Length: 217
Image: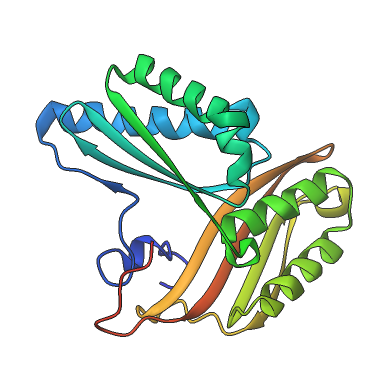
């Protein structure tokens, strides 16, 4: 079960909260769900934001209003010179959704402890033809040095340009995937190399959240 259940979905409502927080019924629910997908895709593919280290996008709603909180390691890139970039992003989202959009940017102070950013860092190295074992080992060392209790990275695909695809993983510390109080940050991404697509999965164990402590987002 620990290998099949999504680490975040397994803990929703226990120690983790949803990244989209709103309520709707019937057809309106489907429309807002597609709108959430559109917003996330637009922010993820926005040209200026590709180097900003965007990890999470939280969405909250009010009548005819959308509140966006973007978590990124380089918030200055998102804000832009005198707020130019974020204003253009907000205006584009308002035109596409026909609603008022408010955008907040929050800095990720320790990107080494963010699974999405760690995975994207490995993907960038693989695209530059860095040896996959070296990229994995260095990422694990940086994450453990930043204060993680455990980390596991798994790659799958034509590693090193081999004819047959295979799976390789590296692990350090504890990764209690069945423990519901364990705060595990999980992300998966892909690296587009000359040999094909390589899948990357990252698990980072940050410690345990005990009853009465705030939920992790």
